[in-house]
Amino acid sequence: MSAPERIPPRGVTTTAMSAELLAEGELTVRGRIREASNAALYCTVSHDGREAACIYKPVAGERPLWDFPDGNLARREVAAYEVSEATGWGLVPPTVLRDGPYGEGMCQLWIEVTPEAELLALVDGEEPEAGWKAIGFAEVGEGRTALLVHADDERLRRLAVLDAVINNADRKGGHLLPAAGGVLYGIDHGVTFNVENKLRTLLWGWAGEPLTGEAVDVLTGLRAALGADGALTARLAELITPAELDATRARVDALLAAGTHPEPSGDWPAIPWPPV
Image (cartoon, rainbow, N blue to C red; front, side):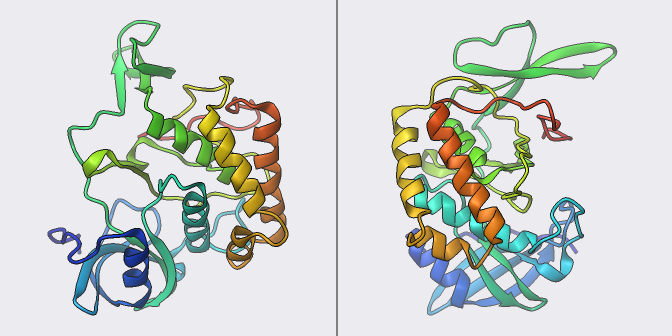
């Protein structure tokens, strides 16, 4: 069974309203997203005259991962949303943890993509043109290579900072969703918050460059929210382990101390496969 025609949100106007609808609405499974490596169900959720399309990923449909033995992917997805909201950047679609037809799982608002938005490209030459950042060279067949680049876009740069904080081990091109109104979302945050450095991403274009003033301010506020009595600490404590929470604080501290975007460590593949 595949996903039917996508249903746009009806009567959903704010992030808070979307989260409330996802958490309290009646969840109806409409189809399955076959491309997903874990169970991902296309659903509609309706409550009090409001309706929207969403993705429901039940914990029961997750495949065990040896390097993520604690907790589950669904709670990590919700934790990534909570951190995104704490930054004020709104980079992750509204996401909640709830019961559904197949038990506990994460439920996330479905995002309609703006197809004309170009964030990644393969180009000839050894240096990117203005407005683009180099990722690395990729084989394109017949012994040829091309330079893989991403847009020099402030939205992507913010997402690169968020990924460094949550230790995202799988930032692929297909996880970037440009939406109407110039909004950019990132999705699929199940493999995050590991205590070991596992950052794998396509967004290496700013590696080693100074963080923007905005990013420093956001990270400073984030560190305060991650204090012992911080609101974010209370939310994350229900979703990830104490060691993972400590590691998150340490990553924020390290970013602020360095004042730069992280660089590949060399101890872990820097780019996910497949990259898109």
